[in-house]
Image (tube, rainbow, N blue to C red; front, side):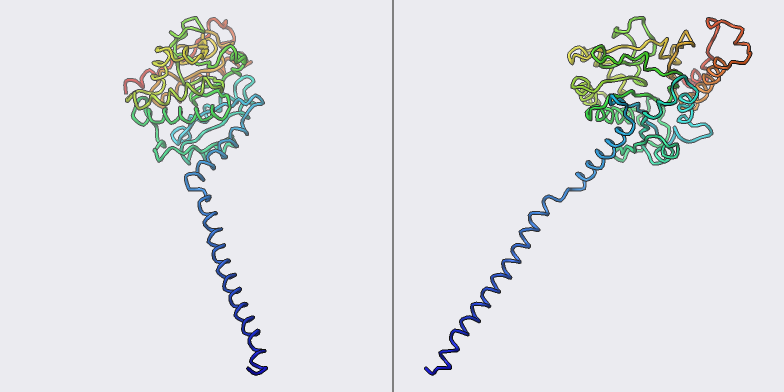
Length: 347
């Protein structure tokens, strides 16, 4: 073998070695790329996870924005039917805070939960604390007549949502928008949570604030977030499929009668209609009444008519100028009749 051939062998070997190393490196890079992709793809959140995360983030932000220092929020739920018209129910509801005693600042802690986009847009326009609740493609836009199928569905959606608020550690006062806040009700709501877990309005007060024979009304209540009340809401909402044709209030009354409050260790205080009044039983004293509920009424139009009359009664009572009322004692004061709501059961 000549000298040139001997010299070419190492060069050829080096060339082969370099090509082999390059080929191995390329394969390694390819496998590494596949490996990274395989690791990342499973961790990508699903659409349902993203929705849950967004729901939690948006709700938490809304609750935090409206919360008092003790994590208490005032919550009202509205749909399009309560935000449109010449004088919408939501506007009348807010009139109560405007005209009431020591109530204006409470709107800083009021969270309006809208079940449709129109109601949400109206809430944002009014510069309130607002949250848009998605309701599994249910249509809750129009008026839901008392005890109609859609009305019952909406009440159960409300119960599910409020249970979620409790699970996030927030206490709340739930109020229907057909409740006028004429005075700050908190002085009449005990803040000692060792005394009561749940404080709830009634249609007719029997004179005993601890008696479970009071006919409860879920249109206004204050509840503390703890393991007992969370368990109650879980039990309550869990009964919905076993109770066809029954609204959530009826089911809660049944649970109370069956001893669920006692078994869960929940202490319930029933609110005197002297302070927490309604069309079922008017407060006897305009000087101390805090809230006025358009209960015992079937339609929104009737509620608006009779609540407007309550506002006029309130204005006359508060008016310092001479009037026929000024010459009367408070014992002679009478609320206007709730005739529209009485007729709503006929038509």
